[in-house]
Structure formats: structure tokens, C-alpha cells
Length: 114
Image (cartoon, rainbow, N blue to C red):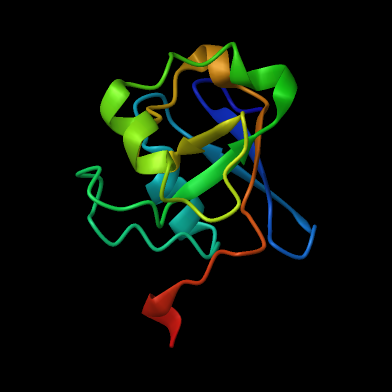
């Protein structure tokens, strides 16, 4: 991994691994969108929707900062939400997250591409 870069692996809705890199401070939603994943992010990170829902790999979930109460409330509306679900717009990447793996649920539908 290049110095100062964070490796992130996304698992797309079909199960394909998409490897990408990001810089500390990057937002997981924007990184996923740049990699071509179907993460709509309708509210542009304002926690007013759940269209950027991802499922964090179990081994990473407890290593992330905890979700806020507002994020937990929005996850109640996410299709296919699980115990390790998060809103990607609320995850700011840090060097400690190098190797993070998240899955984009099969129920994701990016209306930006229709």
C-alpha cells in the first residue's frame, strides 16, 4: 500500500471484490461511489436517508467508531440491515482502517445510474 493510503475492499451486490485506495479523511461513501459501486447517497451525507447502507465485515465492525443514535435510527429504514450495518456517509477513513472490508447489500439500487 502506498504511504498514506488506506486500502478498502468493497464486495459488490453480486459478490465481486472491488479493491480501492483512499486517503485518511476520505468519506467511505465518496470512495465507494468513485469506485463505481451502487451507493446512491441521496441526502449527500446528511443522514436523511439510508441509500448508502453498507454491511461492515464482522472483524471490522467493533474497530470502527460507534454509530450515533441518528445513524442507528436511519439504519432502521435500510433494506437488508444487519447487526454490522452502517451508513457509509458516516465513516471517515483513518489510517487504522487500512484493510477495511464492507459489502454493498444486494438490495442496493443506485437511481443515479437509471
